Length: 312
Image (tube, rainbow, N blue to C red; front, side):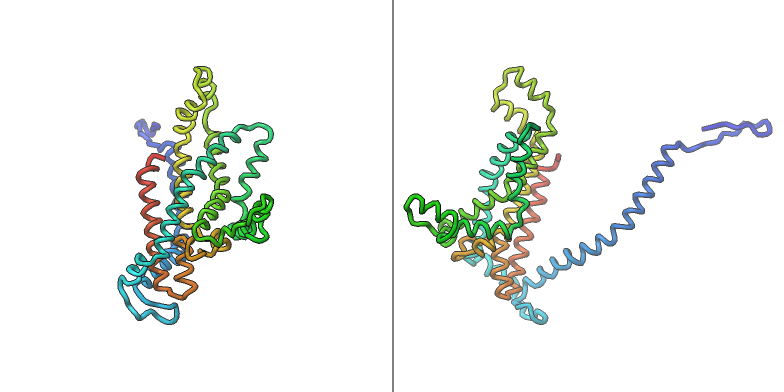
């Protein structure tokens, strides 16, 4: 507030603070940006995400082959056939197995390598690049490479068995062990991504905490349990989220490897959708699979965020 004297009268003049003008300008600029970019984003999201999901939910109640308009309304019949189908139960079980292997082997391996390579010493950058390269490689290319590795006639695995005078196995042709061969590829392909996540998290931890722990005589296991894991908690929870969601949606790594075979032993929910819904032109049935997969992903994502990531 300022004062001025006019004709012997003292008049108070109120002036808004400069920070209020700046705040109003920033709010107005932010609203302009929102109004400029939000409508196109909402339009594209509606056109390419919301409408296709709504159509898939609608088609799931029809026996439809994709030609013409759907007219054969079957209600919940597609969902009944889905849950009664043996191949879908195998696919669901395989997804659960891949999730278990990712959590029990892939993530601990990634964390261990991250701890070894987190320090900025000579040579660690090279090893980080080596372990991260499989993640950069396209899934189709990775699947084709490992298909040749597993080949029982000319592959690397066959040559190793021949060195010991044994008959090479056809790993991807054995229903009992093919899914485990796929899991090896999944671990190899994605653990580098989680390793880099952990390295980024480890580098944010104050090094003085480790120095103080060493001075106090803490062991390596005590430092890991009391300092590293708690301070890396948000990164670990994010890594687990990515691992589970990626395992549920696993598709393009399996198709060049096994195409879901032999005898549906390596099917996942997405490869099952493609095999039984798209290639066989059972669009209504495939839409039912898509609806179930969508609900599983949505329930997991929101439930996980609500329960485990609410403070992150």
